Figure 1 (cartoon, rainbow, N blue to C red):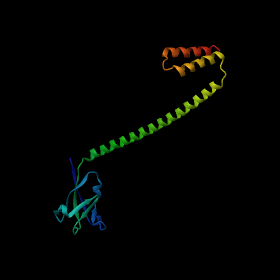
Figure 2 (cartoon, helix red, strand yellow):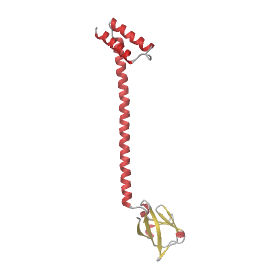
Figure 3 (cartoon, rainbow, N blue to C red):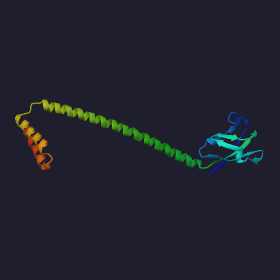
Length: 170
C-alpha cells in the first residue's frame, strides 16, 4: 500500500545555484516523485530529474510546480522496522559491553591465579619438609616424570594419597 501526497514548490524553494527546487519531503525514506504538474498540465519526465532532495529542471523553469510524491512503503511499517533495528543495536551494544567485561574479568582471574600459584610454589619450596614427606614427594616427581603416561588413574591416586598421608603424619 503506497501513500501519495502533493507538495507545491515556488520561487522561495528555488535554488538558483543548482537550477532546481528543494523539496524536503523527498527526505522521507522510499519517497519518489510520481509526477510534476505546472500550468495545469503534467510535466514530461524529460523536463526534470531528481537528485536527492532537489528537483532539477532542464529547460526554462516555471515559477510554481506541484509535485506528487509517492511513499513506496507504509510509514507505520517503516517506523516499526526502525524501532526493531534500534532495539537490535541496543542489544548488540549490551552484548559487546558484557563480552568486554567478561574478557577483562577472565584476564584478571588468570593474573590472580598466576600470582597465587607463584606464591604457593615459593612458600612450599622454601618450607622445610619432614624427611618422609620429602621422600614421598621425590617418588611422586619420579613417577610423574618417568611413566606417568602408563600410570593408571588408580595408581596415580594411590601415590597422591600416600604422599598426603606421609606429609599429614608429621
